[in-house]
Length: 506
Image (cartoon, rainbow, N blue to C red; front, top):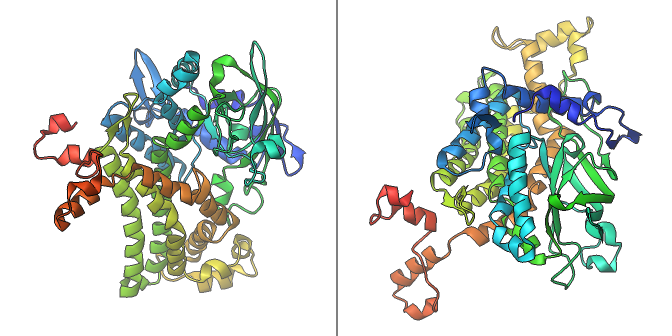
């Protein structure tokens, strides 16, 4: 059942071996670089109990209250509920948090769809994925993913370099498999478990590879070490960097030093087809939550830019309105893809309801590939003062405060203190180390840009345009070969086909 924030905090006080800034962390929840996000994760748990938000955050099934983010998506309403719950969280905390659990559990649903593939390897593996999906629902862990390997020399197979560059199995025991290697993962140092699986199809020539392994990992297991990048929180005053100090999700290199994975936690092993299946379908659900975060970040950019131009009256200029409209088009493009992906959702091989795959992946490309341009437009609208404004200490010092009050007050609506806060906020989301990190994170967090486009290629229905041109150009049937062709995207065709009623389309 749902946990409280206090229960979550206690769950990560398990003696785990975490390092940051060259020192071992004594207590993860209270460490200044982890505490802001740990507190947000705890707040999300408490929101499931809070009378103001529990109806949005939870659902009741068989008399048990569970988190809506962990619910298997069966109906369209399930997706509307998930979207509303995520919006509720981001509005409550006042910013964008990517790794909160709901985006990672969706990757397990993708493997749920691949039970036929798992059964080819070992029927107990398909049973394991069903059990773990049920366990996530009933134990409510903070669940993350673990995909990215250290890479090494990617021109070589793992067997021709240090074998630990890719996570692999080194031994089988009666209790389970023993794995060695490493993964990069955001928020792993303060999460409970991770769905661990291969990143790339670099397993050598064998169909049965020790590198083709996927499992659920208890992140408090013996032999796991977390070596984290330096966090942004606590490095600079929160008054000058209000976003960096609250919303930095610390990434870690997770070392697997001969870690035992019990057989009940193994989801596939020594079967490259299963590994290829999960890589090809990994984000069919989780991409929705990932793209939704971009919608909130777009709102943050729009709000910062609009406040900056309105305070000085620049919003009346046509050139400024055009740039604001570009921000709005980007935002509404993301919104349209999310909305349409649910409206035209498709039934998965495992009987779940997937967001329309072509629309979802196209929306991800839009959100990620254009983000740098949108940030630059927002930077133009915010103006040069985001890079020249003194810090909060100067606005408070008795010798400099009068001058800054004078030159930063525009009118009775916009006094110096509010302008300083707005400029600090805009600088933090556009120009800071945290801003650069977020831009890179959006490009690579789920997969690199070329993989985003590859997902679009695999899921777009190319037959519709071919049929259109064949008919319009008067081409013979020979040009299509013997393959069956459908007139357009399958989900859209079902929805709008005049020969079908709405009930049948649904």
